[in-house]
Amino acid sequence: MRRAMAIAADLLCGVVVLAAAFAGTRLLLHYRTLVYILFPWLSVAAFALARLRARGSGSERALTVLALNLPLALAFAFLLSARDRGLSALLAVTVAGAVLGVSRAAGKAVVPILVVGNAALALALPAFVGLLVQSEEVREPAPSFTLRRIDAGGDVQIPAAQLRGHVVMLDFWATWCVPCRRELPEIDRLAKRLGGQALFFAVDSAMTDEPGDAGDTPGKARQALAAQGLTLPLAWSGDGVLETACRVRGLPSLVVLDRAGRIRYRHVGYVESEGLSERLEELIGRLAAETDS
Image 1 (cartoon, helix red, strand yellow):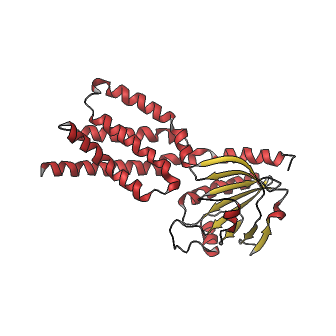
Image 2: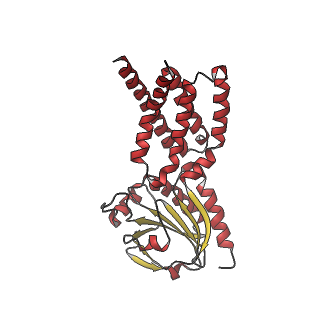
Image 3: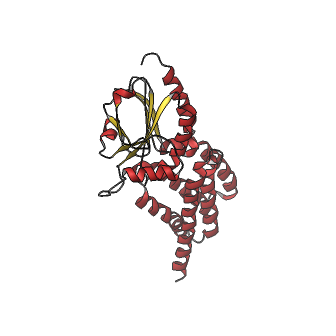
């Protein structure tokens, strides 16, 4: 009975670790000034809880480490998609923190180990952000497509050839996609700043995460942009042809075309702390100035 209650208490502490990880990904990764404390935040939380719960023999301490990390591991197993697998690095951090917390071997060196380890973890954050978003400059042939614009101007078909001579940014998104909704205001602000250098389109996609899901409709897309007060030109891709033409595999995805219509940049995922606007502003300025288009 006593052992069962101890395991239950360890699992409850594991729920606290899960909550700390959830808070970290929801808050800390969204602010550039705070992103570097995400790993130390989780490491210290796991360490402190493991230190509090450490008891008895080595097997009991191992069980504490397991129970402390089990809720987070189960959440990742059932909730993470292939696009989010980089978040599993959080579990490695909490396991390491818990192991250090129950360790007897570390002795008086435990605090220096924790400090040095967390300093190293903080420096690893840029690489971690890179796991969550995939970004690359490319030089791919011009895709053939027709853009269906569905905003205030009505339902207008725009063939790719009509966009030639302009740098074009296509932001593929969906109303159910939380990172998409966070990214759209940033792209909207960028479009207002750089409207003279590029054409911007928010392309609502019928892609879904769940088989059999009906997905978005033009009406849902209009309502979502209006609810956020965004003025980005809205396009619709209900048949998936545009995603296929631009090789879009996940949401949100940004595709930038140069003035010759070639794909020059592809970006999948969104984390507010990644400095996306600055990167895009530099890229668009460079593509707009190219003379070989």
